[in-house]
Image (cartoon, rainbow, N blue to C red):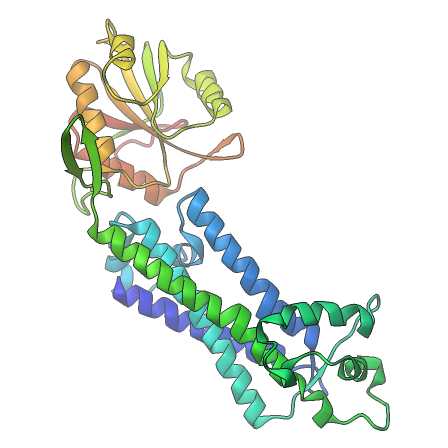
Length: 375
């Protein structure tokens, strides 16, 4: 996985360099729009950081790195590592960490391009707007410049802002050197809103990933403390469990993945109403009572397709088999958008098939045509 991380970082560095070169090259007269720089160095980095945190909390945490790894452009030498990564341990936090390194490399590439152009060219910074004038724009620039108030030369000056508006370029006292003074503001914005936040997030993500990789989950059962490996335990090689597309006869529906009610209603329309349905919990007390007398019914356990199979889930399924040894077991990986079901990814389906292949008496259930045992 280190090789994949290195490739992603190099790709981010090159992308940041090329994007910054493209934006900072300006128009035919070499004029660079200051508002475009704010978009590239301030608003996009902040939005990307918030989006990265959102995906970490809400779903699989793949982020930008996860999406890039799904592109069919990887050389043959990295395919083995790619296969090892998807069902690998600590996938969610590893991908989050790699996303931070990728975007940090992008920021470094943009900074390098900026410095190269400052050294080798004469950049003229201007701005254009039909609706705004200098007095409207200055408060926003001053607000953004608050973190570097100690650097007086990098503060937005109203007179400079007025002179930098594009239609004033023909003014006699206007000089390209005067316009070039915006470079201090631009580089301060890039360091403050692009480079520094991603560097901090990369350190935090690295700490989270390393802690996840080395710390098992502690669970208590009465006074006895049990250490369990609550991480992905799917082997890279092994049998693929069969995939079936329907449920015959009565079935028990157990919700392991906190599936929305409307999704469960849609499943009832496809497979019929379950005889018993409940949220997964300790297999004692009420849950055990619900299962009494249902030894011939199929057990269907709903899970989130994008989350890796956990050792805790494996223990739960083994306990179910002890209670209902004669009941067929089906794992139902689900993916949804809002209140609508959607097809799960092939790589997630293969992972759940490998997981069920390690458990006796369990198969994978997927709505739609029977996919058989094809690998």
